[in-house]
Length: 287
Image (cartoon, rainbow, N blue to C red):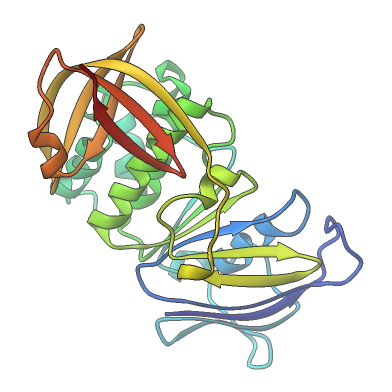
């Protein structure tokens, strides 16, 4: 359980009053922090991470005090068990994919766990490549799994899909949900994109007029956002507790995660329609 009750005067805020945040986030929840640019979304993540000090208040994680203004407690970032994906990615350019993971890992000898991260994101074949030789989507995948290399209990992501095109962003959103489900960490994702609100999230926190407005479950009513593509299935294979369907769409190959029941009805050379709707990927057979 994460309990946050803090206040911070932020020079870049759109409003004159300080940012006040009172939140409770359950262990293992997927939370989107939403709002316009300049309302304090990134500042909130930085305060949780220990990179920015609140003016007053308390941050408590799993009954451990990370920050307490009155008691002068401010746990150093290295003692806060979390991973952070910055907008700038901050990958080490002189290191390979695997070296980036090894450097970030608490236990570099835990090769099986790092291998699992590479497999989940289909980065195994790129383990010897350096960041400059990777595509934008591959760099974003590396940034996410590098943040997970130290086995954090909390993953913080700051606008992780903002520089990607819609199709790639939707695929990475689906992959992030698989990582979240398989590794059972708590996710706090900052965004101003409605596509991050739509889909399967546990709660939405909207920052507005200097305050945090918290919505859960049935209180979430996102606007439907839908688009479709047509492609041909190349192969279907099991992965972790799910399945991956490789689909050729024009000149590109999409890797779509799905459940075993859907995978049973999919076969190579079959034409399918891929529908992105409210942050989820749906498949339907054609012909």
